[in-house]
Length: 188
Image 1 (cartoon, rainbow, N blue to C red):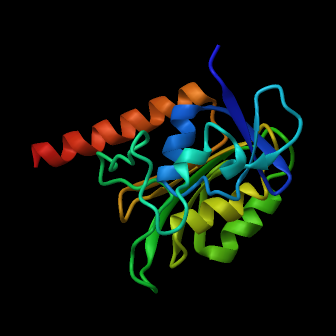
Image 2 (image 1 turned 180 degrees about the vertical axis):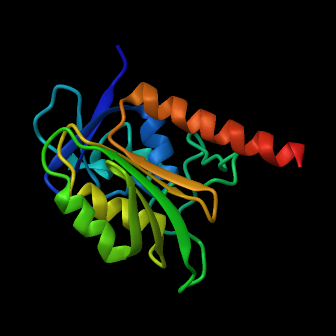
């Protein structure tokens, strides 16, 4: 059986995630050396850089990436959770959540803080904001419970970020998003 990890964010645990997913999170900037992780079956959280299997993902400052774990460029121009747009640039977002753990009002309040928004379906919004997709995702997950899911799509820049989907769903969503993006670009 392969090793899996959970990640602790703001006192909540998420996962389990495979080594491949952890590598992908690190490449996306969603897993840092100071991220708190625990292996499957362990209670004690530790820094990702202290885990024997994850440490190679974080070379010492000034050191190149380890030769045994080369960092592969993302094959897709879509950068999940990253933002390279100029300051003050406005984007249009679609945000959808499935709230199973509690009230949606805290999520609604947080979304309205980012800019002009409209709830077009239960638990789905359109938002216009200067805030990056990564910031929106990071702030909104603080309002979610252990069973809740979230997806944020930047329709202006063709980016997506999501949270708390099962590992299989996460992998399928990434593959589909990348495949669709690549197909659309090659056909134009």
